[in-house]
Amino acid sequence: MSSPAGSPQSAHRIDGATTALTPGGCADEAAQFEEMGLSAAWSFEVSHDPFLPLALASERTETIELGTAIAVAFARNPMTCAVTAWDLHRMSGGRFILGLGTQIKPHITRRYSEQWSRPAERMREYIEAVRAIWHTFETGERLNHRGEFYTHTLMTPFFSPGPIGMAPPAIYVAGVGPRMVEAIAA
Image (cartoon, rainbow, N blue to C red; front, side):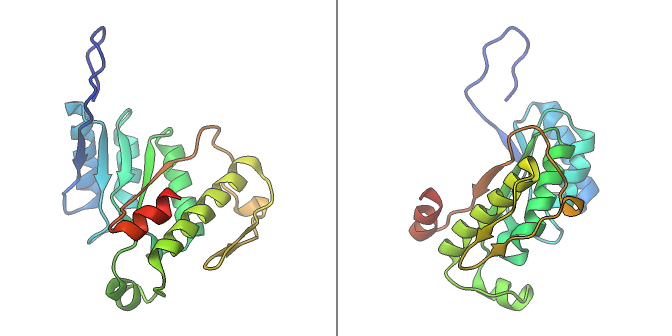
């Protein structure tokens, strides 16, 4: 939470969850949260994509962090997630936080028509893949992520969004259960 000039910084962090029914409404809420001095505004993946409200919020805010709480990782591949997060981080001037979660098997298999297997291990590798992709964006080095679940080995200059000259986005994970917490902490 921000403090008035000259006063000690507060040790408390207060974030806000956007609840508006439209992406524009969520962006408006993020701007209100910033005016209130909150630390972050979080967008959820329920009836709307969680990234779009944050793109709008990045243009309507200047200091508040903007994050997904959560984006369903297994509904999108690591490359599409990495590109979207990279763009939001650039648009927001380094204020974006990528919050990921697994969702549950019926949603992944029946709603998103994606595979479900070993979610803790898959999430760990998903994050490794996203970070490898971001490294390639920033450095131009060859992309060479080969894993059990994801393989990313092609990134030509035409398709790379290029460096942003700052630390990559932070990644937060909704770790429900000891196996997920253990896998992510490793």
